Image 1 (tube, rainbow, N blue to C red):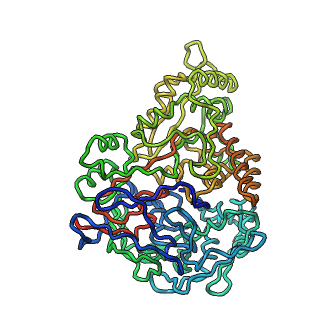
Image 2 (cartoon, one colour):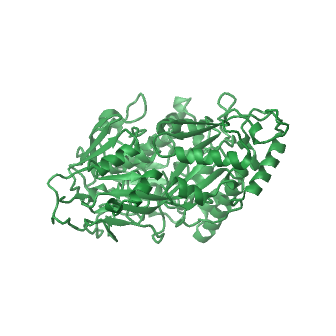
Image 3 (cartoon, one colour):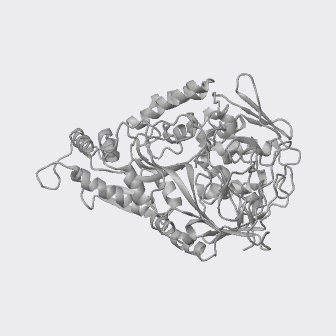
Length: 610
């Protein structure tokens, strides 16, 4: 998942799903319950019956597999985060337009003249689900847990600008957790401190003009000491059930089957939930979930399957329940660049391949260039996404300052073939199949991984087939196989695959989220293991640049290094299709929703008579 916007006017689409199934602008919670703000109550749009259903239970599908984790600072995937953001809230939050607004904090932070100190005051009425007060020390604890190298949290790197964070290996330091005393000293020095019970002071060691937005993200959700299991460093089962600081709590988690949410009886924000229960269904493929929706057993579902998209488009009786929302998300595929500076002889993080040095062919730039050049991205979207989306050429998404339509390798099969021929020569590939010529078929088997039951198989097979016909790979050269999503998250960054499916949804709307988080040398979400020190330097310069226009140009320069080197294959800037029953009221859909429509603001939703 990725970052929210620092600017208000980004053209983010927000809609309310009304009783008649249409879409109209809405004033969704403008401040996530911050005091003194004019938070407009959601409209009481009614169904034909005129009111609300007696049964205020919402039923949604989240995934074919469990969330990877429900420990906030350990989460990285949309399935987990979609649940967590309803159970927990931080100092700040994001409104429907993805502006950063107060949540547990009374107001946006007071920022020092040098931009390195951010001071937050916690609301007097901010409490946890058990009624105990949310304390400043709970945010300091969250920062320490997030940066603890022993936990290997995927998003630890976003806190590297904090003073003291530079000591940890994930931020370029030497503290790796092997020395308990050194680890404790380093954690105690992290620049998130409590001054009394209700004042949180964040001190930066590295300039980061965007850092106030980080306070809205899940690695800094408040954490009580007794929630933490000392043996694992993660939340205990008891803390996952019934604890939290958001509008809902988890009543039960039947692993692989269902998560049940109930309203937090001590939720301090506005609005208070009207829903009395949310049943989050887990398990089974998307096709099965859509059939449950069609049968009336689910109230909303995200549809990513191409066949289902076409089926819906052809059915006038249900097409009106579809809501296509341009998303702050992107689909792309990683190449094994094998450039991770943290790799070791024991853990090379590089799959074996057919090159003389034992590495895969994706370590060659011309080889990487040939693959995207051989794909007609618009046709790829039409065939495998049902036409939903826009061909992607870079990492920063449309609507975010720093978006760039730079495209040095457009669809051109002849050029792709020339790049492949150059690559084969550079790699020293020999004729291995005895046909008397050196072709792409001679580079050996390549592992091609993706997650099962999420509609990706047609896309994977489309790419493999078009690379075969355009560039000369054999029919069996791609070792295509799927695993469940949690397994893919673990295997992808550790050299399991030559090529692997990936995607990124904006955590916050800023170029640093789509660039630094994905392509910095050794970064926690740098699954392609691409590394260029010049890129890192440009990102550091941009983060310290107070003139945002100049910063944007630096982000564009950095992005072009990624694109020129074909570090990954960018394919699709996403459009999300949500199916929502017409009786569901005040569903605030944003371009950064996770796995279900309106899941940033489930507290606004009501079930109308039907």
